[in-house]
Length: 145
Image (tube, rainbow, N blue to C red; front, top):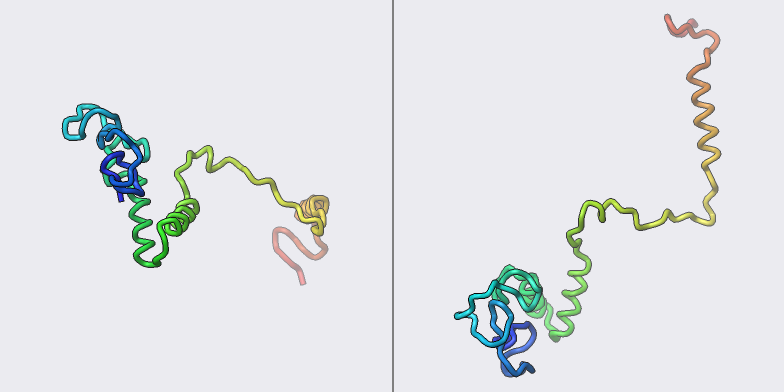
């Protein structure tokens, strides 16, 4: 439900608290949308489109709230809370730098043994094995049994 006085979602014109109507195209007071010559500006998401445009993310969110109520019932508040929770779970667009930035520190378990010295020791042992020669093995001919 969108108010045709302030063009915000969630209430109708009758319940609107604004005194002066706002233009649905540019979001300014003093003129109607049909006579507006300003650039479009959404009062709901602050995007570069009219408040009535269906590309508005707030419009999509309101449609999701209405769908939720249609399928699950409940109040608008409950539907808004459920949809807000789902929206928060969605992955929001991020820059490459944000995606690759490490924000979590490695978790060290108090019960886990420190294996760094053992791993280094095993690596040194394996390096030595690859250089060793074994009795009965000729690199040119293989094993002599």
